[in-house]
Image 1 (tube, rainbow, N blue to C red):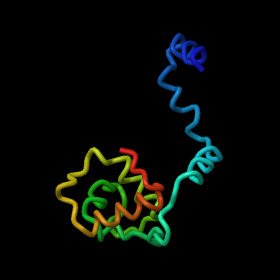
Image 2: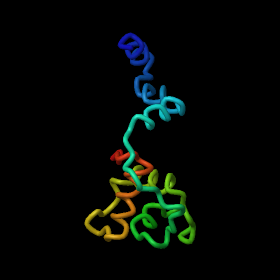
Image 3: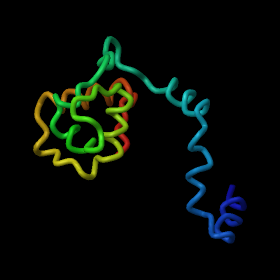
Image 4: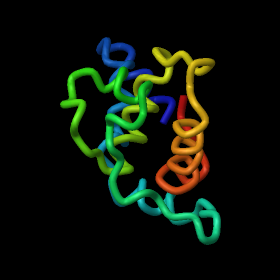
Length: 111
């Protein structure tokens, strides 16, 4: 692996190492199966963007009346975490994020 990284660095492609496993859906599924899911906790069926102010704010390019899947909502939170004013997050939205982290994120919020 170290040799591979040296070759990439020589070619000016070291930053592309992150892309090597990006599309490894089978590997990601295997990793997810090893994580513990809390018993009895299920992700919500659909998330109305209009019900969660911070989510609506960071998903500015999405129709405010849209409904997102739990996976889509969780991905938006993770991708835009640095833009969130967490002090302004209400209890309802905080509970949603905790539920998404427990179910979709398998207990991990990658921020």
